[in-house]
Structures are given as structure tokens and as C-alpha cells.
Length: 249
Image 1: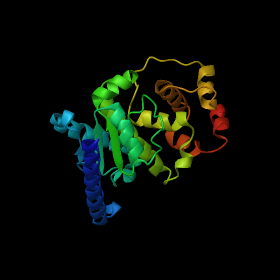
Image 2: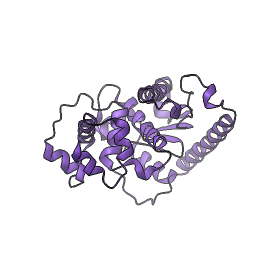
Image 3: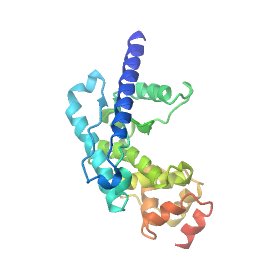
Image 4: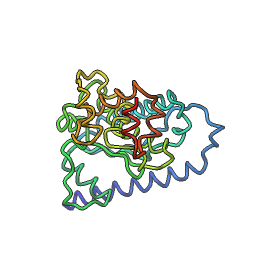
């Protein structure tokens, strides 16, 4: 227990240093119109000893996840929203149990809160926290595909991009299937999934009468994206009449 407390204090000290450094850097950033399309800034990564020997691999994955978001944002004319970094540090934890404990402490949640078995990553307070690839494969085998760990991190960054598109209004992100569908789409997850949903199954998820899986959210999101532009859907997702709009498509 004493060792874990010391490790947690060490992580907090490192995070504090990262936040202070990021704040200082942000104060000296050029104005938006002075920017060129540069690569993402290298982000500090905190790893346990069990996977420290994979540091270079993780650094590349984190960098590529940020590049994926920048590429996606350019595609939809949101490039300006990616000039400011989305995170100051990345913490990768090689145990689901330790991950849950750390997240609950970091977010000041009740320690008795039970997190979903497949809950694998989050980006809060400009810190991206994730389980390791091995743990991810173990607790969410349905999510394993080419570059699945990079896509997991990209997914979490995509939620932050979504919020920036909405100028910080998280309440306007829409229903679960939509904001998760957006992140799935941005991260290019389940692009080759062979899942097929009937019209009735689609509307069960849209109306909230059935809790869907991420693969089902991906299908439903892409289904409506074939009927309307992404920008239009994002603007309307938070409206109380969103379902009526979808029915009219």
C-alpha cells in the first residue's frame, strides 16, 4: 500500500509539472493566423515499469493518434480547432484494477463506484488515461482490429474535438449513440465491421429503447451520415427534436 501511495504521489508531481509547462507554453503560442500545419507536439507519457521497455512504441502511437485527429479535422474544415493541444500528458496503466482505482481517484469519484468492464480510456483535465494494449485486448476483445490501440486513443481525443466544435457545450453532443458514433467515426473504428441492423433495430437504438454496442453505434451513425452531412447532424444532435429530423431524412 505504501509503495502504491508513493507511486501515486510521483504521478501527481509529474502531472503538475506537465500542466505548468503546458500553461507556460500556451502563453507563448503564436496567434492562429501565424500557424502552419505542424505535427503534434510530443506529449509526456507516464508508464509503469512493466511496459517501460515499450516507451518508443507508445510515443509513436500517441503521436499518430494526434495526427489522425488533425487529418480528420482538416477533412471537415475544423483544422483551426486542433492548433491547441488536447492533452498535456498520457498515463498508461497495465492493470484494469489499477486503472479503475486511478481514474476514480483522479476524477474524485466515489471509491465504491463500479466502472464498466470494457471501460478502457478517458481524456479528462487534459490528461489521457488508458489501459495498456494487452489489457484492452483482454477486457474488450470486440474492439481489436488493425491499429486498435491507436484508434482507442484517437477516439478519446475525438470527444474533445467534438466539444470544441460545439464551443464547449457538452450538453449539445447529443444522445450516447451519436457522440460515441462520432468518436468511433473520427477514429475509423469498426470500419470493416460486418454487422447489419434492420430499420427497427436502428430506431430502437435512436429512441433509446435498446442499449447498443459500439459496433451498433458505428453502424447507426454511418447510416445517418449517408443521409445528411456531418456538420448538419452535429448542429442538430443536441436539439430535443433531433429524432424528428432523423425521421425526415
